[in-house]
Length: 138
Image 1 (cartoon, helix red, strand yellow):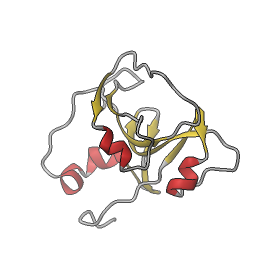
Image 2: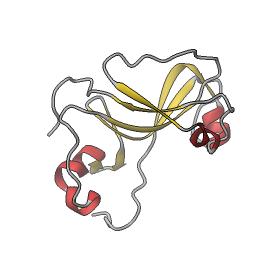
Image 3: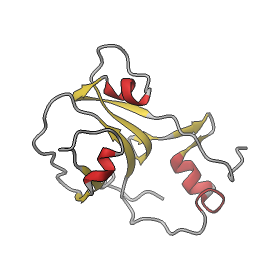
């Protein structure tokens, strides 16, 4: 059993995107294969179709269901059916806008993007998306 008082290191999920490139490997040391168009590295994700994995026995949702108090403390659950993603995005091509059809988004200060060595024109979005399965998660 992991020591819940220690930091948890989840395995990131590398997500191919048409705007991707190799900067996630070059800048952040992600295991991006040569020539691959990886546009996102999901560091922490809890969705019906994608899970952050801690080890062979635990993923993020399993921790939330079975070890909530030990890992997360006394926080309340988010609204049913919402997904959570914390990730690093990269684009090799200019993208004018990104549409989140059923979610809502919030612009964060550009200073947050600059901390990641992003160009000054970068914007950081905090996006709240419904779970793609469309049903509440326990």
